[in-house]
Amino acid sequence: MATQARSPASSRGPSRRALLVSLTIAGALLAGYGGYRWWQHRQHTVTSDNAYVRADVTAVAPRVAGYVRAVAVDDNQRVRAGDVLFRIDDADYQARVGQAEADVQARRAALATLERQHRLQQAQIRQAQATLRIRQSATHRAALDHRRHASLLEVHASSRQTYELARAEAEQAAAAEQGALAQLDAERRRLDVIAAQVDEARAAEAAAMARLELARIDLGNTVVRAPVDGVVGNRQIRVGRYVQPGTQALALVPVETSWVVANLKETELHRIRVGSPVRIELDGYPGVPIDGTVVSVSPGSGAQFALLPPDNATGNFTKIVQHVPVKIMPTRGGPLHGKLVPGLSAVVSIDTRPGAAASATPAARQVARQLPRGLAQGPTQGLTQGLTQGLTQAR
Image 1 (cartoon, rainbow, N blue to C red):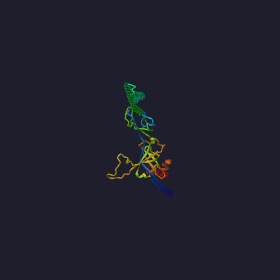
Image 2 (image 1 turned 180 degrees about the horizontal axis):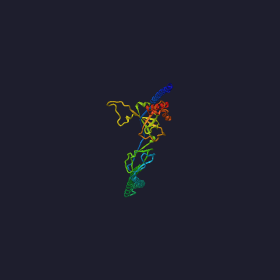
Image 3 (image 1 turned 90 degrees about the vertical axis):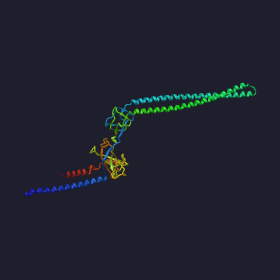
């Protein structure tokens, strides 16, 4: 009976040892597989948590000065291009438009007067030309009479008194012709002066019309509209506040066209290709990865575009790994479309396998999903999850 009682206990010992050996072997295999996958992931993936969401933030500022009469938007409100954002009191600008319109009317009236004077002067010239022709005819007739009386005087057929009278009339006719010619020249010069005045009046009218157009533009600028689609942010405008041209009133953030900028190490730059698929995970939306594509690489490191670029030619030199911004465009229509606000932190995993960049455009989403999620979160977390799952299955 004692022998039979010890047999179950002795039989349970080898089974426990076999289970522990099996679990150890399974754990080692899982650890080796996880390490291999982690190594493979590191070989074909560039991961960085130095990534942030960026967008073309549009600063909206008024073009004219004045007091804000009405604000048509609220904080964080979505607007479309062309929607009214706020209005500036336009009473002064309407008065300026009226003043400019009156100036245009006055300039047009002055121009019309000068044009009538121009036409009248042309008639005066025609009259002077007719007078000149009359004087020329009289001069010709007086000259003939003078020659005829001179011939008669030679043959004693006319008296000297008659001859002297004919000569005086010829001289008077010639003088009258010269006077008519001078009058015609004066009328022509007066026409040139009036023509110059007409040109000046036309230029003044054009300047007045330009001022009127500027006044109308200023009046139209009292209504500030959204230049692009976006979400209202940093709203500083309030009713009754006095604004100056160029002073930022609010910002429009086009959240639907935002992108991610990853600052990668210069030692990883040779592995990056335009078109490479990217897996993006935002700190603000954990567990919701989105796909993206590398669209461009910055032409310089971040330090080169700083306000004071470093100068390693002076002082002690300490080599520091530089970071180069890489622009990543998320796939449109994803689960976070329209929620990528500028400034959010992100973790990016770029697939650098050969041929991945070539097929990124038609299949970027499928390639990005092939990245192991546990490994993308980190090798330690991935191995821990793998071992836990293996032990659970062995039990």
